[in-house]
Length: 324
Image 1: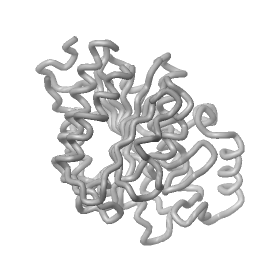
Image 2 (image 1 turned 90 degrees about the vertical axis):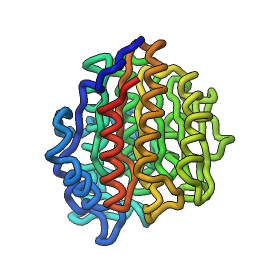
Image 3 (image 1 turned 180 degrees about the horizontal axis):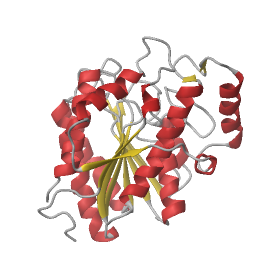
């Protein structure tokens, strides 16, 4: 199948909302509105082939496919009971604007699925903050309130009838939340490269899920881009291809960048473009089985503002210009 042969990727969309510009973490916190602002400033006025779409709030029905009702009630009570953000743990805060941003992050991820499902070929990027891949079914942690990638994967299955959905995570931190949401369901697949040791302490290669539907590649501090790319090319992506997903969702964390203050991996901006290309090449091969080439990308980490903005731009450039 040659969906993308000699053509630029079509059906391109960027999901965002101004709520991500509101401060709901303490001043100096790395998960800050300036992250969204840096991306916005870098891509606004460019990327004319991408339509802009406002992120909606996720519905309770969408969230309940991943999170427990008790957890959702807990977050609702915090927001309604205090005029100021509350620390859920030393890293994670919940207030009116922050929870709305998280709701729109999960809702935007679902909308990104809807966008790419309009045609057989397309890509959609959600630029929303805060990230989501650390949020477990019954717990917020690691800056994350709702597990956006997992919510989007369930949305793809329930609303679009997709049988198999894969999440590919290249954030420097392991996505323990996505893994926990997928662990018992062989129709969902999670592949992750991440630094170890590092927060949250999960992501050993021995963590494989109920049906070998979890594949982890822990990396030592100081690992360079070449080694990380080889790990994806030779280990993670062949496992994803064997799964034959109907949809690929990327947990696009850019804190594996060499300039990021929260990690110790050494990827360059250009490495993120190369990794995006490798994922696209895998997705195109996968189209022989699934008859479609659809990519949803969801912003996760990235805390050096310049490196984040440049890496996102490189990611979008590669998604748009992909050729085979």
